[in-house]
Structure formats: structure tokens, C-alpha cells
Image (cartoon, rainbow, N blue to C red; front, side):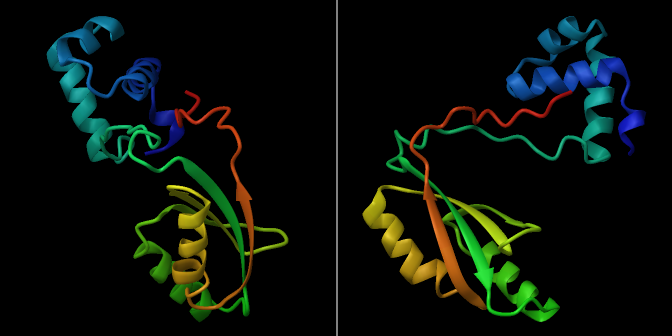
Length: 155
């Protein structure tokens, strides 16, 4: 599916779901101005085409004892396809890693993690991150304030 395949109603439906993924189907239908049947058909189509990748709950990390958000620049010792693949496979197995992105610029990957505190981060850095295949160097950025973290896509 291409971006141009989404009409105004699809975009409205998606924007509402990003705000409240648990909205009742009847209320969603009312808000977008379609029947519940037509709304259900659109939802199924958007899921089948992969536009809606899934549904989940947003949890409060502070209430779960994960109050420290950290971004880490990772530089690898070599930039070859096999090193990239080994690193990526290992990161996918690390539950502490929330996100990992290969980037262009002065380092290779940007890792996002959440831990309890700086002691827990130090343990993660030594036991997990620095043990990943190919890691040569890291730079840590502890988040002092989350200014915006709602994650909704601009539709």
C-alpha cells in the first residue's frame, strides 16, 4: 500500500486509533461518519495491508521501576555486512533494548533503553551492550526530561 492509497477517512480513522486504540467500534464509526460495518471493513483492510501493525498498551515506566531513559551511540569495530548482521541479531535478543537504529553519521547505531537507575544502566552497559558483537565504543546520553514521547505519527 502506498501513502496515496489512504483517503481522508482512513487517515481520520488512523489518527483516532493512535489516540485511543481501545475505542469501541461503534464510537469509532460515529466519529469517522461511517456505519460500523464499513468501519470494520476499513479496519480489516488496514490491518491486512500492514498499515495497522498491531495494538498494544502504553505503560508508565516510572510506575514499573524503569525511570531512567538512556540513548546510546554505538560504534562498531568494523562496518562490514557480517558485523552489522551479528550486531543486529544480538540486539534483537536483548529485552532491555527498546529501539535500535542504524544511522548515518559519526557512529553506527543509536540504541534506546530503559532501566531502573544509573546503577542498572552501568550493569546493562557492561553485561549486555559492550558484550554485543563488534562493539568498539559507546557514548551514553541519560535523559533528564521527556519533553514529548507520545509516538503518534503525523497524519
